[in-house]
Image 1 (cartoon, helix red, strand yellow):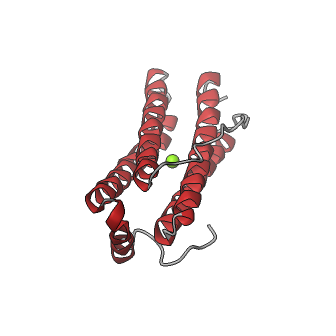
Image 2: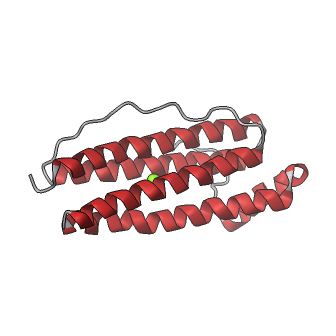
Length: 170
Ligand code: MG
C-alpha cells in the first residue's frame, strides 16, 4: 500500500471530522434561520456544503492510492446556541480544531516521508488559512454590530458577496 496504515486511519478519521464540521454548520444555519437571519443561514449552509467537498477530496485520495475507506460514526454537533455571537464563535472554534487536525496529519506525513500525502494535504493547509480568516472576520463583525444591529452583518454579507442572496439547496 502506498500509504501507511497509520496515515490511512488518520485520513479516514479526517473524513469523519470534515463531515462533523459539515453537520455543525447545518446546525448553525438552522439556528440562524430560527432567528430570522436568512443571509447568515445561507452563509452557513454554503459552509456546510464546502465541508462535505473536503470529506470527498479525502475520500477520493484514499481510493486513488488504493487505501481502504472506513467511515466512522459522526458525533452530534452543538445544536443549541444562546446567541448569534455564540453560534458564530462556535464556527471559529471548530475551524481552529480542524486546523490542528490537518496540521497533525501533515506532521505525520512528514515524519513518514510520505511526500505524496504532504503534497495532497498542502491544499487543506492553505484552505484552513481562508476558513480561519472568514470565521474570524465574521465574528469581529458580529461583535462590532452587537445583537441590536445584527441585521447590519447580513447587509455586509450581501454586499461583499460572501453569502448567496437567498437560501439555496447545497
Ligand atoms: Mg474543512
